[in-house]
Image (cartoon, rainbow, N blue to C red):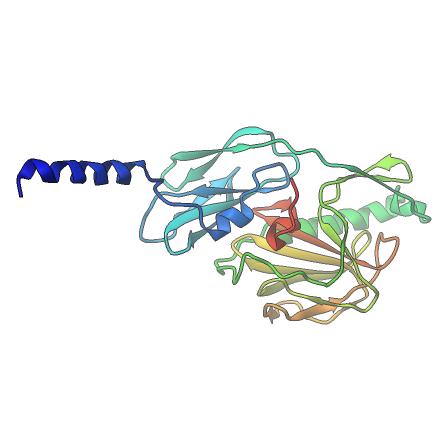
Length: 280
């Protein structure tokens, strides 16, 4: 066959190859990439043999190989994250940019009979500050453990009763936005770990009541609060689906429910992203 008759098919194949995207988005990207304040950004990383290291605002990031194809960084974006261009920093000092889109959150008005849970007395403030430091330190932990799964199970059955991020007013006074996701559930309902992890903090706190923190690995941490009972011990490894405790109404709560926080690189983010119920 003449050589010139081979050139056209070869040229067509090369053109098609270069017009294809380098890699299609994998399952984790499609699930988690919700780059809004209170959301998650997924950033593709350079190819290399070992897991790349990356930071965002000086904090280490969760990095995984997605679908056996490419390295990605999973970035938690706090509610105070500015919209527009943000960047992560790689180990060699280079940077990769991503865009944070705007998102509006609703308001929630709550009436509490106990006024001290709105405006604590000075003696209570010392306790609150001490407890806040304990919990902030727990959120800041970063272990080498690889998360067992990133599509989380629901920790309890039942409807989502109060969404993440709403601006909260207690007895007419604005306080911090809602940093977790609430599930309506009756007292005593078992609370199960949405992914495997290690219990890194247990306590009975002024606002949160009985509380459990679970480290899923690489800065991905769950917090469960307002429990009526804790059925696990500090330092214990818990499998996916392992029982952590029971639903209650301890701390600042108007009735029995589970409040579930998810934190990534020290930022509280919408847990609905991880169970596939996120709504823009």
